[in-house]
Length: 242
Image 1 (tube, rainbow, N blue to C red):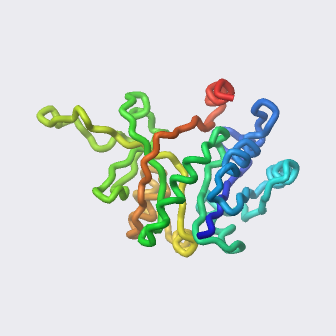
Image 2 (image 1 turned 90 degrees about the vertical axis):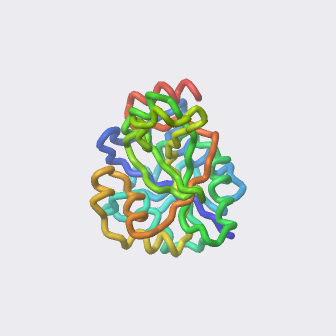
């Protein structure tokens, strides 16, 4: 099975313009993501997918693989889909470009589930009962079925336990999403053809489009999590780790 990692990276972020090229103690963020992912022995290759010449030049500068993609893409999945048309692969893993401390073991965990030929899409989840995380709309919550497939993703705490006073919840755990996706190549080519849905727009979560159209998303439980950089205020936490 050939597994390829793709790192979508765009310069024009509304919350943090130029984010992939910020300096993190001597290396750009995109370089740190690329180097972290490249430690995975499962990935046959790693490719940065960008629509910006500055990012392209920076990746070339540190010796990474990079391809220019269309400026019309609205999601990282769309950018991965364009790359998929140009490469040979069985599984493509979409790795967030704002995860400078990415742990390659997460990638290996995610790729391993594709030994089951029934799985078409997979992502990561971690148990969390942290009150701040549950209240934070940037931390995505998931509920799962008995197969560990996602039933729903939301920016709100789900399930709602307001009326659970008579239930034993001592061992109950919320699941929070970690935004790394893996898809079989042929499935990815189908996903990028789907039209956006109302649910997706309401939650601003593209995976709800796939689920609406009947695609199952297997959630792989992990206990590994690293801080990402959404906004400038996240920099301090990452720099402290470095």
